[in-house]
Length: 354
Image (tube, rainbow, N blue to C red):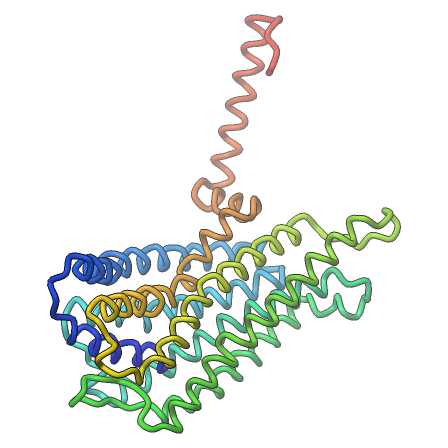
């Protein structure tokens, strides 16, 4: 995750050379400050509330028995960690004008270790949820056994341990540099390792497997719908809606990750351009893109899953509704409406329910 620290380095470099009072440059700088002053707090608040509601809903009895919901539940915890150790610390540094990471080597290492591991766990759980839904649509009974809750729990434990072990490199390649006010990789080899993990495990493999599994899952669901009733695989309505939630989450991940990776590739290619080619407008535009896709955009996936679930799945909305209004109170309203209907019929027998 040295990408965020590299973004910060390039950001200071770009902004230090932007001394013009060109109105277009001022607008770009104002837009960047808007992301930091307004966008980040709003995203953090919405994301934290969404993650907490996700956790509560996935703990409900109707959700605890589903393997896909268990993957979503674990991913939500990882997203909450990312928002806390990533977005919140970034906000703290901006609003207090004091970044403790650049003065404490231990805090620098711990922060990026936890952030890297949490991002890997979050994406790993989504990949597993895609595989879970794909195997649920299989006609092979042995494959469908993968969708049991006890197997999902064991696989999640393996994924968490694997991601924690894979992220150990951060403790060796990251360090704080008070002179330059940076918390970043301490060598060229460290940058190569960190960049490799970023592209291979944090974007490349998750995006590839999410796309493949989701595409195959959609194809199998359509294929199953065309079969005769005797040959169809029985897939419950709740499972289909969980698949819809998953598709929405995969789309959100790819849409938010592509600008982040594209901007990183552009900055990597152009970082050695001569200073004479860097106009104030270009510096301001690059600074805006750094903030929009880095300090803000990288956490959209972590923050917005609850709202994707709510928009795509009626069963999830129903659980949210039952969380807000207890079932006992709903039954009370239903009985009240029924008594009112009976009373109206007695007063006016011609009354009919519309």
